[in-house]
Image 1: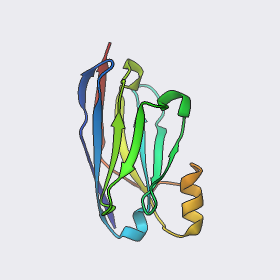
Image 2: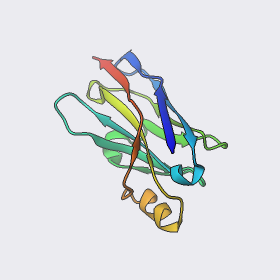
Image 3: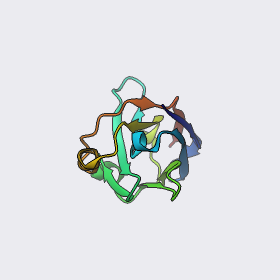
Image 4: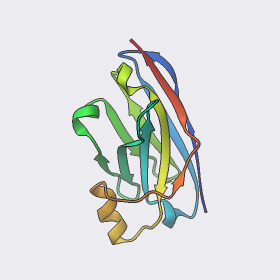
Length: 132
């Protein structure tokens, strides 16, 4: 079992920053690949970034959208995943979710690093609102 709890969301003006945190607990093997996703009102959920926590390899789903603004990272204990969001824009407004893909073998590592992992466990989400 893996449990995920997000925090750090809030309201900020355009150009501001937020740091989202995802507290992770449970079987470490089942949470080597972690991801941040977001869902804006009326839109489908989309991937933001994934990270393979054992080596910190990060993948960004839409580099043009978040390049040089968002950074996904994890701590050494592999029990927290962060999403640092800078230069926020109104279009970043969404509910942000943390997720874990089950598995920690070489196949999962490859899938995680190429954005092809399937995510099975989700947090409750944290709201980010950016006003222009």
